[in-house]
Figure 1 (cartoon, rainbow, N blue to C red):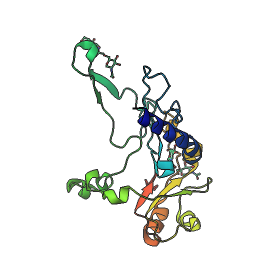
Figure 2: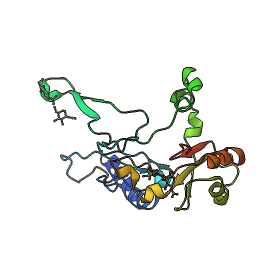
Figure 3: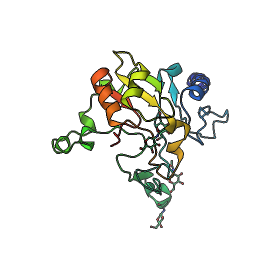
Length: 213
Ligand SMILES: *[C@@H]1O[C@H](CO)[C@@H](O)[C@H](O)[C@H]1NC(C)=O
Ligand SMILES: *[C@@H]1O[C@H](CO)[C@@H](O)[C@H](O)[C@H]1NC(C)=O
Ligand SMILES: *[C@@H]1O[C@H](CO)[C@@H](O)[C@H](O)[C@H]1NC(C)=O
Ligand SMILES: CC(=O)N[C@H]1CO[C@H](CO)[C@@H](O)[C@@H]1O
């Protein structure tokens, strides 16, 4: 038992250093908190965002009632409830939730934009897991523009790079922490997306990939 405790403490130190430089943490989530208080009677859930000294990052946003929802002012609101509870005599606590599949950190299925793909059953399970996991290039996009063909060209992303996470003005504006959906978010313009497909080896794009008309 003691051995596994010190291992947790070790991970914790690493994640504090790495998380502060690599990814804006979720507010209210202290990534330095490794769930150990020294007092073993006090239970604190371990929540880590960085693993193995930066080999794996958890970049998902926490689902909270304030998380923005597409074109809504209300945010996610009461999406989670205790359907059965021990306090009411059940053997276990069981939560239920209701959210749109396009909410928070998610991947778009091929059927999201193409009806024929939807009808043919191209759901997220049809995506290649090898593509969804692995080495990813984090690229900073100039903050005064949407992602156009010209911007894509200027980023000079080398051939052979398959996964790219685009960090944009959205991050600086902390849009994912604003309850009211903000339509002025930065995203790919159609010519930017076309340039990417025609001139790079990128197969996985992180963040806003919705083409603007
Ligand atoms: C179980 O549900 C009760 C409410 O009925 C709650 O007070 C308690 O914290 C829950 N326990 C766990 C382990 O989630
Ligand atoms: C327990 O059951 C009562 C009566 O059905 C209900 O009003 C209450 O919300 C329930 N509490 C929980 C935690 O499930
Ligand atoms: C990106 O495009 C959106 C929609 O046209 C616009 O509201 C926003 O201001 C643009 N952002 C930048 C930085 O140009
Ligand atoms: C990695 C990255 O750029 N994430 C950003 C995606 O866009 C939201 C806003 O919609 C930002 O809050 C994220 O930081």
